[in-house]
Image (cartoon, rainbow, N blue to C red; front, side):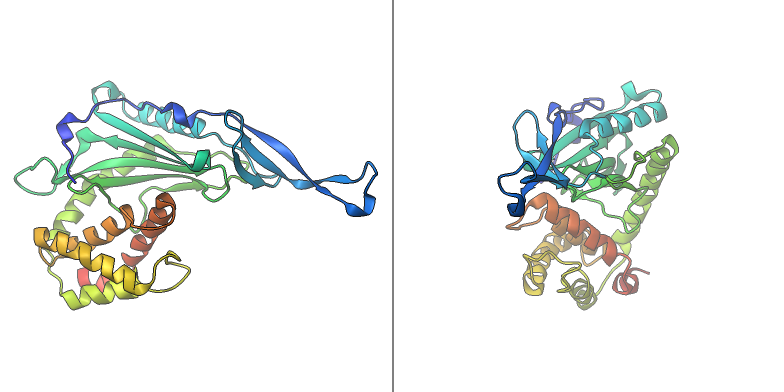
Length: 303
């Protein structure tokens, strides 16, 4: 899949209206059969239901220490940091995408900085480049904490560029009384790391690998049938089959290189074929790819 970079519109940090909705807490009760027929029959518990006001949809069941943090507020805070870090932001080409999943239970926001693209070849082909991206995660069902991370996107295939250190990731649980923080210096450092990532990708393109080493790396990491690291819908055979198919696609373009190893893995993570919720599977797999890049198998191929 290819994208015409020059045709991308500039929406300057717009936040989609889908991120704006109100919620309300509703106390939960249980029926105490011992006290049937008395005023003590209905007893409250240390739990409440979090419900969308506009749709009435249940978002989650939480304890009293759960702090509701609206998606729009988080997005606006990050916008403020970016605008402070970039005085001439009106001259930048920035696009945003807000994704609200499962009736509002989960949220992801991507902020792409197109004028900071880095070309990975000397011919400067339109899609042979990576662009920096600030990504935000949050949820109201308790499964995702608040997270702000600096990432990159490879435009030839729209793969997310996973890094083992998850560049300048800040994380906050919804039970934390302190709001998540994201600073101007962290944003600027993310841009600097993006430039270094371009150099790293070019090095990957030059490094040749043996197919048997690649197979061993995938088998011992991404296809390792360990329930702590692998989506429960997949088994080792299916994962290896999917990776093998993707490997052929990238090897035809980049040869048997570390870059092909990397792009195969990030494609598998970014565009999962699954019976489950894609947004959940993709996020799990991105963590698996990051772990792969910290493994001895990756080190043996690349270092």
